[in-house]
Amino acid sequence: MSEVTLSLTAARHLHLAAQGLLKKQRRRPQPEDVLATIQGMSLLQIDTINVVARSPYLVLFSRLGAYPQTWLDDALSRGELMEYWAHEACFLPRADFSLVRHRMLSPEKMGWKYRPEWMTEHAAEIQALIDHIQHNGPVRSADFEHPRKGASGWWEWKPHKRHLEGLFTAGKVMVIGRQNFQRIYDLTTRVMPHWNDARDLLSQEHAEELMLQNSARSLGIFRGQWLADYYRLRQPALPPLLARWQEEGRILPVEVENLGAMWLHTDYLPLLELAQAGKLTATHSAVLSPFDPVVWDRKRAEQLFDFTYRLECYMPAEKRQFGYFVLPLLHQGKLVGRMDSKMHRRTGVLEIFALYLEQGVRVSQSLEKGLTQAINDFARWQGAVRVEIRQRPGELFSAQPSGWEIDAA
Image 1 (tube, rainbow, N blue to C red):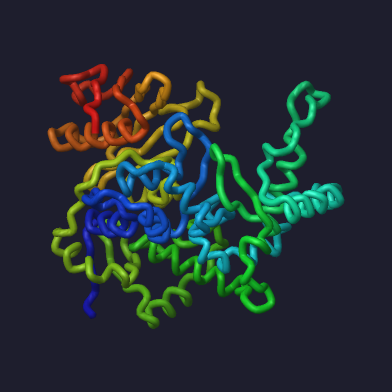
Image 2: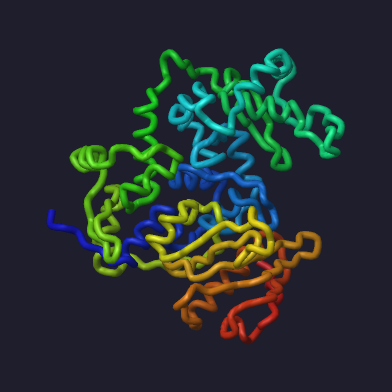
């Protein structure tokens, strides 16, 4: 095959096609779409910040459109999904248990996520907790009494919460559901009764290669250096790995405008001809989560989309440039801006503190229509009846500069 060359726009569109963000889904979402969407991304990162809909629900919404958030909880309860440390804390298909089991069996390698000294010091209490779950069924940390204030005057972290987090990282318990977003834990032996470490365990090397293969498929088009971050792996020896994958027909070398040598996963060969001809069009506009796979690797987002992004909620307020929980804005294949917002659930108002467009983005009728629809969909899905805007580019939304009422769905 002759050398494949692609425009930067075509490369972006292939990546968004792999991520389920190229076009808006036309049909109504179905419960089974939750698992299918997560399988497409490989991972769904978990975060608890809820100034707007929590991140995992928002990532699914950006791809599926309006769906009941309970569907994600239901998929976890049905056993289609599991939780574990992957990119960070993530939902992943339970069928991928084998990919992370080696991590569970070596929890001391998990850094801050596992404290061996705590587990040793509290071994008797932890064994009593395991026995409690064995005899009484699944638990939440909320099922146990909170200790009194510590000597410093602050509430201490509940010991049972630490015990459960340690057992979770060590693979002794698994999350089988969530109640008000609180984890419900059960013993792994009960959740995975047919699993046998002696028979089923993959070597770390084999598991990590499968993770890298998932990363390549979920990225669609990639630089080799982008693969490891997807599952937080150490950088592998890329030249022999990529050469072998090419021989096996998994990937195809491509040359991309401005980015140079890249690789296309062969699952997307059916889209390649369209992409080369400039006919793989992006029509979707969406509000993204800061933890969306498209932007969670900040270096990749900058290289592929020329989008420099930093999550500022962990910074002191006076050092923030854009705001507390800033959401990237996708429009027709480009990351065109970002907005800092809060959903006031009691009053039904989505308040946009500030909306910024990227340098060089021109306000057009298409852009305004796309962003209006994306913001309305995002707001309505969360129960909003009005959008209020405090700060925006002067040319954007000039006909309704302070916000608007949202039509009922």
